[in-house]
Length: 234
Length: 112
Image 1 (spheres, helix red, strand yellow):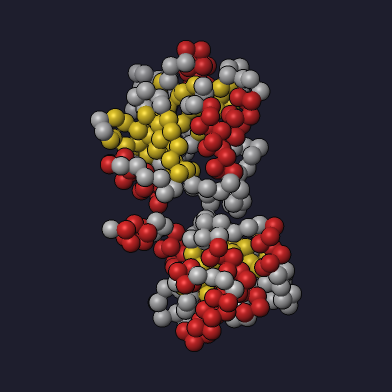
Image 2 (cartoon, chains in turn green, purple):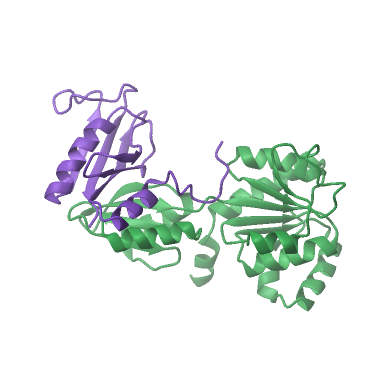
């Protein structure tokens, strides 16, 4: 392995950016491919698949054998609102492989008794996200119903290109939210990325069922990353 | 369950390899590139080795690390990468094997 390649790869991994290390197993030459880089042919298809699934594997392409080592940052889910839905969502998401952080400045809601074993911040999203910024391997679900708490986080999630942005509320509630986000400077194309009403349409009724719908939508968004953009080009 | 979303710098093999390199050590990197059947460590797992035989990480959960370290020291000396195969069915080529019955292919290369 080239020392510069190792150094670059570690920089990407530290910064929570995805990279695939491509090694030619015939001659040992290696290179780093970043998410969004264009690679042609069968190798390109295999690399795109490695980014989507996170699975590393050997592939035959162009008469050579390559090893693709996928280094994907661990996805996480930030939930704005220490509410009933979040109580069900936190353990389910953790089991599915998405560690959860919950942010809610209302200290009556954000208590360790209501949320055992969860990273919980009884603070304003503004303050928490300054310390631990959102990124493209973070999903954000805003479920407080309170614009004072949700709006800043939603705007921050759109700016950070979170792979999933969901907001609880009816279509009517969301229409008002769209106006507020436009006033905050969000673009219409950004706002179109918000999933609202939140969650896959499975007819969820209880808070726990809504949590399932939100988790399913998060997983779908994660596993289809990049596919929508490609569809738009083609 | 490890919940951290950040790298565990003290235990991450590729971070350790970079640190060794900066200290001027000769380093080999071993990578699981294929598995068949039940294998203890997934494809992409790393073991990093220095010329004195110090190592970090894992390619098999302990079954074949000793043999990989020996090969790695040769690779550091020659600079020529090697592909190693371990498996319970592969009795002639290797004295060590995987008790779980799986088979793995490990690519060993020198850093630099």
